[in-house]
Length: 497
Image 1 (cartoon, rainbow, N blue to C red):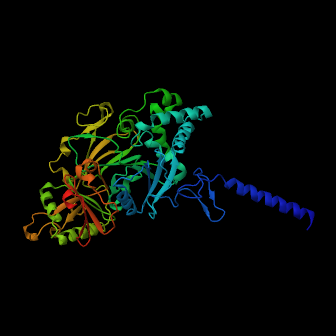
Image 2 (cartoon, one colour; image 1 turned 90 degrees about the horizontal axis):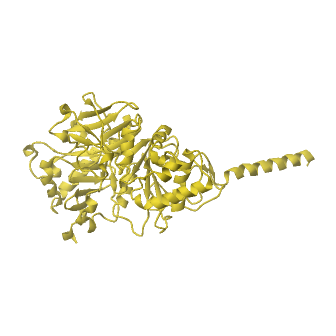
Image 3 (cartoon, helix red, strand yellow; image 1 turned 120 degrees about the horizontal axis):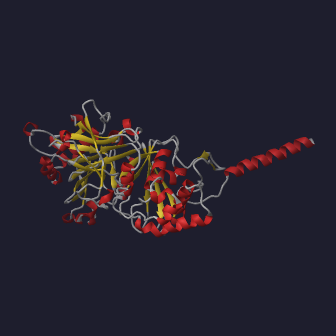
């Protein structure tokens, strides 16, 4: 072989090694085995397979970033939370496990669910990612400064019961796992059951706003405005990060170390909501989506439904009679059929809206955080109706720094899940004045249920619901599950033991 050919071959071999070396970085064993934990703009080269990134491609419509602290036991609600996520394949859930209690987090909690990505982090890694984010925003930290920031986070972490201290920054803290083209990211608690997102998320309006958050379908004259910690959504944008980074306690290194830290106990609904509405120019959309009724029904794939017209509550008890299997089967069929209806535009041409003024610290109703963080509004009298459950209600800021409006929309027949009479009564349909109506909701939060005595019985089955099963809850009494043939397969009440 000629001399020049040997030199060329050697040069090419060295070049190839350098290229491979630029991709091959340290490896870490975790929920994704040999996937390296790299920055989102770095590729992962598995020499035995194709090039991969740490986030899904193409970009999901929404990535929900949920944070979990594994413990020796798992709560009742977790299997059904995952079942409700699986029933919404357009969602991507990044399930971040912070091993705060040092019990290990490598075991997968949602095996076989394609749209749940689990990552396992030690607390050192978890808080290190937060410190790196802040240091980057501050223009850099020395090694000693970074250690001081991490130490301060460790000192404060036990007050962050609901992982809310840095909630508006999750998209940036965990950006290596978030596709940069994902338009919307969200946060959620796991004591929730997600309904039918295809029908109930405001897809046609969502990308117009910096913040989107659901509320109950009911408003009183004085509306407390806050971003619920159990489910909320954010635009994946630098502007949103900049606006929240103006918050004094995170704006600078000195502010983070020296200023009084968040003390509300619910900083996502207290301090951060106050900051977003009063001190930033962020646009937002508050829309109805949370179950509020005493009686609610959930079925993976069909949705979650709140029975709110109180005159029919007494009929719900008939569903529990062992002899009424046909009623229960009819109800399961009705829920599944409702889910097949096409999605409608969020706003119609018949809505009404009026400008409102946001007030800070003036709300005099019940609050669970210091009152000076409250932000509220008074509904214009012409938009107040006696049949509150017959209209949809919204609070909107369309332009950055612009006015805020309160909007109502009529509830049309196909907005409801109308339950057929055979699903709750033996009476002839001619004797029924109007059908039993249920709100088709975005999600249920087991806030009241998990503090009830019946929840300890246990209140939910250990096995997740299948797509052929209905979960029925009477918040005061208990929970039942039946299949699509009307057979009760779970009963939480004590007399069922």
